[in-house]
Image (tube, rainbow, N blue to C red):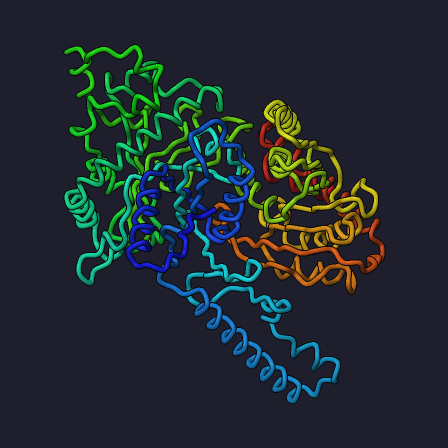
Length: 622
């Protein structure tokens, strides 16, 4: 759905066509889509697929125009294929070192042939899975590399490591705001590559005053484009703000939104900054730049001017009269407000590149985290969990929608999430609009009241959407589902850090994969998100020969600043290898889980009752 140019033989016609195409692109709505690193290609496919299914309604659009491309990324200066070649060489060197070390150890200790074979195994062999290259580069930055189908994907950990995507479309704002795979979204004001370079000095070598001066210098040089950019961005903001009452159940930012849209009342705003590659030896911090970022807002050029044209806001313009002196005076009072602001101006600093945008979501009205903390805010797409989603740790709704799109579901498919948590993945699958029947399950019932409210909101939201979702309490290692009846298996696995220890995860993964192989039909697809891909691939391989086809994708992603991996695999026609004592292992895990729950309950009781450490030791000894 990208803009296409027809092949015309004459040069003049080609130039005219390219100019018309450029003019068409400039007239489109332009959005900034912050994307977690590693999900760029998957997000691009998901956004295009969602717009292709969307109904543009009775708009004046004769053709759907959707163009999405990468704007800025922390790895722009690297070639993914060069990183792939570097990683292959790294794996080869590690294998050679491991073989040499094994031979030397075998000669010195005169080991048996069986022991030699066991010791010659390369510690990096799990980095090459079939024809897929996946692993971590030894570059000191923990750069991860993998493959999403035929494309190389690179990612880095860190809460501020993200990629900016540029979306240009003629879709109405109602359609854009309904796309589930889009999380935080901003209206583009302006952008420039190498804007913070000063000769041979990059922004990482400057102090806060020098970077602020570069931002102010950029604002003076691009004053005309910045004014036009803010007019377009605030026009988009005003149109999205009119949808907040219906979409989020909140009123507009202020009582007199119509007056502010028409330029009859003043607006308030705040400035925020997100920059990547934060280091301890940096000479400045993000708050040092907020004054310079706020100063680029052209208040003198915007005050007293309508944010929307008469065609976009007919109802308000019908009641518009000439501006009174009181209104003209009030609209000069634009001010900075750290709380209760109308709109938020966000600067993204990617190395020396910079982009400015206006946030289009009501984070402040929902009391959810915004961009002021210097990192990507939480998703607040309805249905909303808790207090704007900011009080609970869960998978982003937009990331869950992207995982669903990777599986490419078809109408009538049955999808299962064995470790659903609050049910984010099943809810997004049910709201996808492709007629999926999604079932999620979780063994922990501590948050059942939140899950119940979440599912009720999802059902109310999905009354007009083809699809359904539900939650069940079950054990993921012993699913209450018959064999070969599931089309799609999507799961956000425990990372082995908070929900489950590494040892428990090693015991859990083979049991889960065994159940996944049992319930998936031949040709069924599985999309697994987890912290360690090698353990998951090992569990998939241990299910038996020809149970699963070779992994189609293994690629790294940045989930909440942590390194994670997405594995895409398809069920084959092979028979499942029955695991010895499967039910006994499940029983032992259940006993451990019950014991841990009792210990946590005792710890809470002891804390409330003031029990000392000595009393705890005596009770344990008894």
